[in-house]
Image 1 (tube, rainbow, N blue to C red):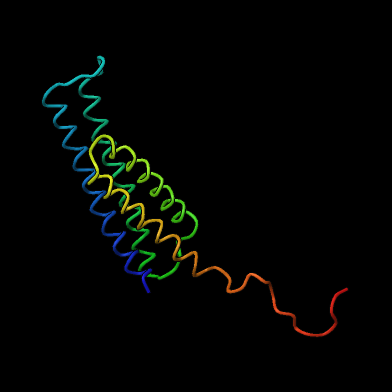
Image 2: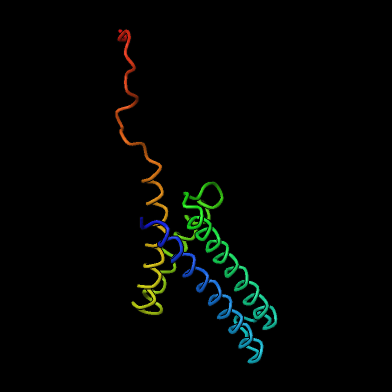
Length: 148
């Protein structure tokens, strides 16, 4: 009952987050390029290009996770294989980002990252509960001789 809306909400949040990450890193790359900033003697052009490429790759990663969550919501089936691994890795990334944002940005950013982490875990756990067997006792005896 709650699985599909969680998957759709997670897909929307990851879509927005992926686009925002790519846009912020692109902006930071432009700032470094225009200001000719350098850290430790690194070439500003290389820093600018690496910020842009890293932002695009990280944004595409979140967009891929959003696509997986959208497919989970549309099909109403648990993610399997690569999709499950991608969502688990996104949960780990959001856990690490939550820990970093607590100290560097503040509690509102931490709350957002923790909420996204909670959505990912909720998506993974609700589908695991669906796939779990009804009883843990094992198969019912069909009759006949009892094994000795």
